[in-house]
Length: 447
Image 1 (cartoon, helix red, strand yellow):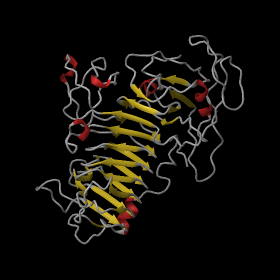
Image 2 (cartoon, helix red, strand yellow):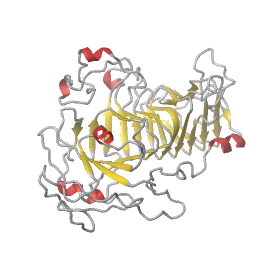
Image 3 (cartoon, one colour):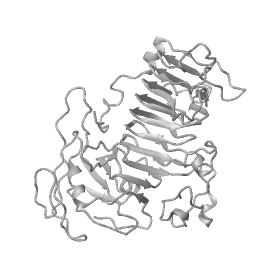
Image 4 (cartoon, helix red, strand yellow):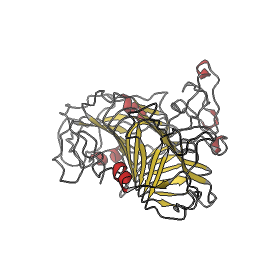
């Protein structure tokens, strides 16, 4: 069924794609094959033509489930074990009320926002669902509940030669202490509705529903609570910070929270100030991503394991890069908890950020464990490298480890808490190349 415009649709900045632009992108990533039909139900090869069906008319004969592709060659990601569904997020232009429609090709469905598409995913993980999002900025707070497993979120790039990376932005600006309010409330001077929030120039509504305030946990622009989630080429941002009167980032304001197992992000950006990326629990993998912030902007635990490969860690101001939480006295089974940065760079965001203004991390829990493996550490990092949580911290317990790092901030000469890792620690913490790819049913990443 086609979805109708809703007053709760997220505010969108961008242009409404023409119907002819929707069809070509239906050639999906190589890990599965797609059968297509026109609106009359007739099958055809190649890209689908523009739809000519009546907006509310019949959509033709339903197709069987999408067919799986041939098994991948050795060394590539496995195909999903379950049949695959495709959801399109194609927003209508908010200003002129344009609600142009597109037909449904087999199991392809169209939605106005990312949360709306997630709400329609069948629970239970029987299908891998690809949510392809057309370019633009989506002002909405998104949550994937625990029963919506095996989702792949990616751009639906329509420009020739485009990779899609950075073309889709999911933005919100909740922070700790900020009152929640209805999406039907006034959104301030910016105009347009923002699902559950407002722009920096907007106002906070004073309604009966505004009694509750956001916490660090609920402030996330994008929350993953379902296992086997993958995102490619998406920008996740929490704008609460200096531009919203937050000084240098005085409020906890999460861009992405992960409370799930076996999540992966490829070529994604995480933008914020304080507490940008929150690994609440579970194992999460990042490749070729960018994380920006100032205070504890990569944090999480207990029972949280994060692995960053070839990522850019960008310091926007004075603070700490990591804050890992691990306490073996309280959680003795947290044996795998760690943050591992492999061949990453840690640099200032721009020349206005002074040198020696940030530390690599501090222990949120007494047994915090962070490894920098073959990383490039810029001059933005102080010589002491790592810091204590407070004056009561037992500095002998955290394991802040470095191995074969380079750059002006990589010298171990003045480290107090941090030290060089042993080969045994490196072998223990740096995962094999099949860290996620060998897991059954895990959505594939683009090579």
